[in-house]
Length: 439
Image (cartoon, rainbow, N blue to C red; front, side, top):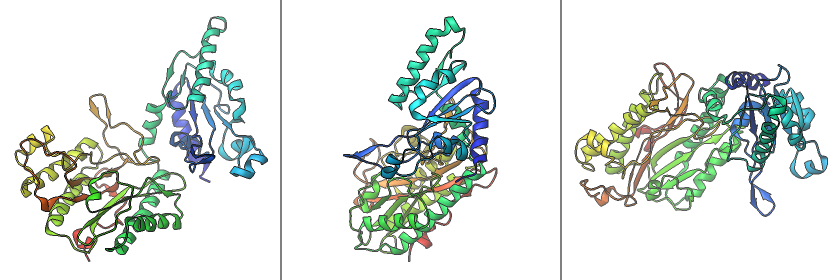
């Protein structure tokens, strides 16, 4: 179990941002897969970030308007041997206090009874509506009752507002423990990609490579894959979220693998590598790969404090467009092509996203008209790509694509830690230079 001080420090920062508002953060619930079987449990990231408690159907209250020692309240499933025989160990009320630092803990069955007492003197209620209908009904019923009594008591929460902007502001900058977990996920995932590249050969199936990668994740102590692994050969690589992974690998095709592991404390890696299945690039594949690699290298250089995700994206985009112009796959002026979006039949996504407890992690990219500036401790992916297929219509005034280019999909993705001058590529253990991709 992680050091309780980690979560305590996060709660202290959260209390400061809440001011006099009480926050209600629910845990995740079990989700039915089929009949009476559930999907494997995955804790709500906001709840985990503040509590470290890894059981379903819990609720955490954060009460800055209460005295120190009464501010962090957990409602959890009670100890119940008859249920634990079927579904496993529960910490229960006593364990929530002893092992997870709750000031006070109650059975989840008592939530509706205790909630009015905890909320009545708060300035407002910080709760995300639209996500948890059962809990939302209890919160709104409680708030309505408190408002009805306010003329007699003289106080009641005056507003309902989401906790997300405050909490996600905290989650955007990683602390040293988070960075350590991200390094671990990156190391395991990098080695899995190297293993896949060394093993893949014509005649194998995409599923076999997926199984190899995900077995390695588990064998190295990870929780498992962070998301549905993409193992896309040939033209399948032009499908951005291809996950069926059923095709047979063919000599002459490229294999695009987008896969990452999740650690036991839910931090994730997200790596993409593309390489020739037969061990050598065709001239068309090589030309496109060089463009994507150069675009990624340019984008990574811009992952420094004071930059923005838009700067990162534009750094890659200009290299991609210039390269496509040189190959004759685009025509016109770089700035005009970018402004008109005339490149989007080849590159239809952004160049990266925040990374952390979620693969597409919490945090704003812009605040109104202003881009969020990168700060030390932020982590993001950098993942330019090119996808040459008939899936997307060629824009008017752009050249038709010769057949020899079609069916090539390339993406290169790394996880990068923002620093002041020299970005740290956490996933550098997965090689990507052309000389390393060929054998």
